[in-house]
Amino acid sequence: MPNVPFTTDSCGQIIGVAQSGIRALEPGDQVEINGSVDLSACLVGNSNARVYTINLDRQSGILYEYVVTVVAEGPHGLGSGWLRLYFTDRTGDRYALGIWKSERLQHTVAYNSADPAIVKIEWGE
Picture 1 (cartoon, rainbow, N blue to C red):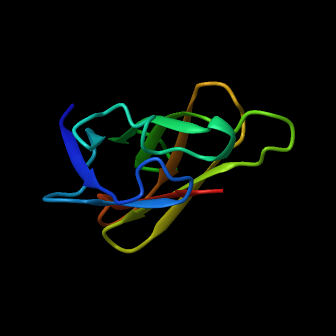
Picture 2: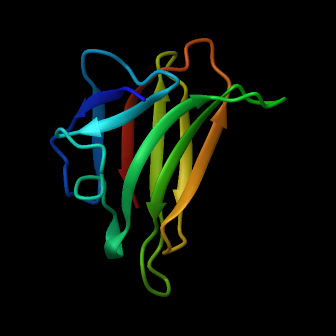
């Protein structure tokens, strides 16, 4: 699985944006930030929420052709809220994922697109 470098000035902040560099995240690729595919020190949320990995794949589903897979854990503690992620593809369409469970789990966003490559990732509360 090829790694695709994304850049950000928001590493470690609970609200941020990462942009693709030389190329966008295509099906079969994994996000890399600051030379690491372990994103947990960079993509963070309130109350110890964090994202570990992000991949884009093609799937053989009936309804959706593409799926972003995120391994993450949501904020810890009662009433601590959500970690929200947004993925923008080359067409400008934006896909949302809300993570609230404070366990390290796999989460997915499935979608269809004429140009599915992810060019921007946003995170926040």
